[in-house]
Length: 377
Ligand SMILES: *Cc1c(COP(=O)(O)O)cnc(C)c1O
Image 1 (spheres, rainbow, N blue to C red):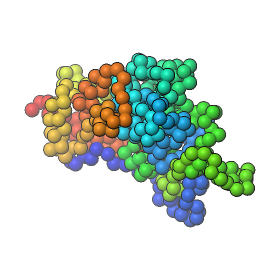
Image 2 (tube, rainbow, N blue to C red):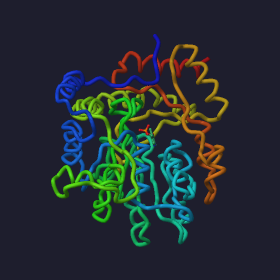
Image 3 (cartoon, rainbow, N blue to C red):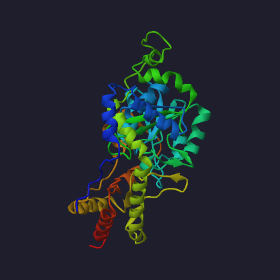
Image 4 (cartoon, rainbow, N blue to C red):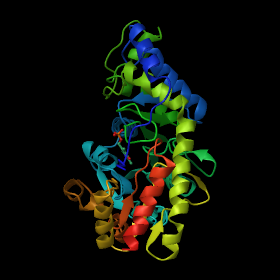
């Protein structure tokens, strides 16, 4: 049995919608499938505005332009995240300030955020690791009295919530990813949700190369011109057509992943009891989406040995982020606040198991049996 780490999910209407997009003779970002994807967000998340973007990275960039960050500004984020979260900060000349994570969730630690806030702090970027919500109520309570923007990196967060409220609807802005490694995909794609009135006026302009083209298309002005800083944050209609089919079937795709997540979690309970590993946990306040199933091993050496053992059995498991504070660009552009002990420790001991909607019960059992066999060698 050969088990890959990830395969993108398939939904029912991708070919049909793409064919329709082609026959519509409208392929740029203001076509009907982009509109339908936007409407899907407006209907399913309590946000003020959603724009569909070419990636989560570009959605985060757009958020930085809307927050108007620049040299001298600081942005607080976890070191344990994907490059994009910090890169967008450095791109606009601001300083990423890396803080530690909570060992229970691997999400940014609100106490560490509080200690990292300075008069230069302009933005906090919580990352919902594995689709498990950060403590957004505490984070918003830290940010709002100080007029600090909160931009959720909800790349992994679709169909998940914290304290009953959807991820992506807590912060002033939030960015989602539809990269093929995420739960809902269109190859490359993303979305920016905006939840604060103050940000709405510039959003359409920033998104469309700094022009008021949207007002022109709506018939509000008779020509459009350069109004503000911006870029091209629009997704092709062909990708949006694919995405709409995936969003429509998102609840079923998420259900399938959650079933697999539970199979892993039950299958590995005994090994945890025996002290061989620690299973991923989801706090009761969070409703997760099974984006990731990870385990923590007792040491980096055990992890390396298990990783190799699974590879020899044709099972592709994988580690995750090299903490950004220790990456070359993190050292050059960022700075550390407080201790990063938890990050350094857990990043070295975690292993992610194969997780995708089409994984069968037999395949999950084979992965679990193989991990069991490793500890019983
Ligand atoms: C995947 C991911 C991104 C980047 O998403 P793209 O759509 O590939 O730009 C950013 N942040 C996190 C936490 C991610 O997991």
